[in-house]
Image 1 (tube, rainbow, N blue to C red):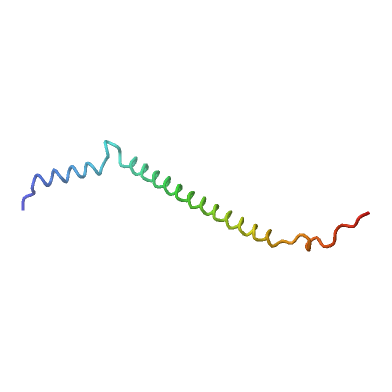
Image 2 (cartoon, one colour; image 1 turned 90 degrees about the vertical axis):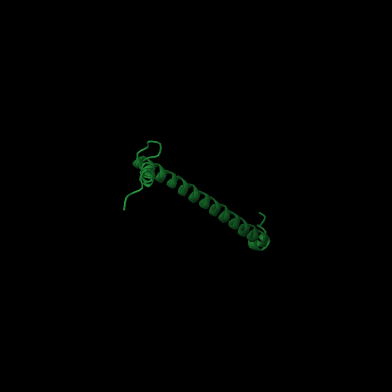
Length: 84
């Protein structure tokens, strides 16, 4: 069976596109892709950490306020300080 020359040139163009983007070596493309992936992963991780910190501070603030609302300083301190 004979190969179709049009299919061969299309496959060749596809291989050329895979080999380099605008003449860029494949290694640099992989490095850039990994760099972008790491940047996106770090950004997502920092965003999650920031939300977690905000959630923790919100919960701690709520608990502290509830504890202070229940605190009875008169009974905690007992009798007034003696007068000398």
